[in-house]
Amino acid sequence: MKVVGFAGFSGAGKTTLVEQLIPVLRQRGLRVSVVKHVHHGFEIDHPGKDTWRHREAGAYEVVAASPQRLVLMREFERPVELTVHDVIRTLHPGVDWVLVEGYRDSNLLKVEVWRAATGKPVLYPDDAFVAAIATDSADQLPQTTLRPLLNLNDAAAVAGWLLDNEDRFDYVPEAYI
Image 1: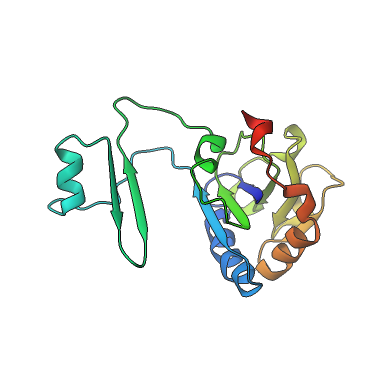
Image 2 (image 1 turned 90 degrees about the horizontal axis):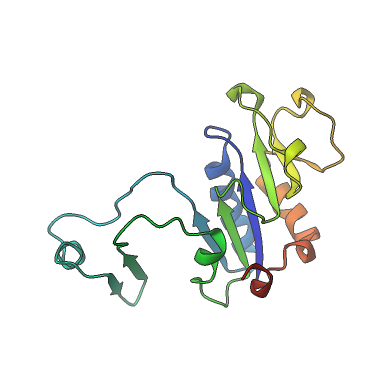
């Protein structure tokens, strides 16, 4: 399993890049999973549906399964901040690539996604885990860097760089226990 993070501030284009990378990697015959970190509560269930009713009744976990998909919902009794490694351990072991969006402060190798237009700072000067920078504003980076600069608007090129450097992204779970 290969794991790469995509980090940057809101509005930089992380979700769009990850969304565009998935079909590019799939076209190469690779199985792709995505881990997305959200900072606020979210709902994927709907009031009145069976799974919602089971959760409302107090179930710790509800699993919905069909021939097309499986969904696991777990209700924490109190807020729990899972590490990215906790979440990765829950994924199917047969996946080829895990694209992690968010978890900006994790110790995963990551591609920083940065646009000058957002007015947000860069991460790479202070984050040794930034392996490359995907940007549409390379000429406006505030500090020079030896890290590869990738075209944020060319998902095929970003995927090519990931595949050319895939050995760097081997995930060894024991290293994060």
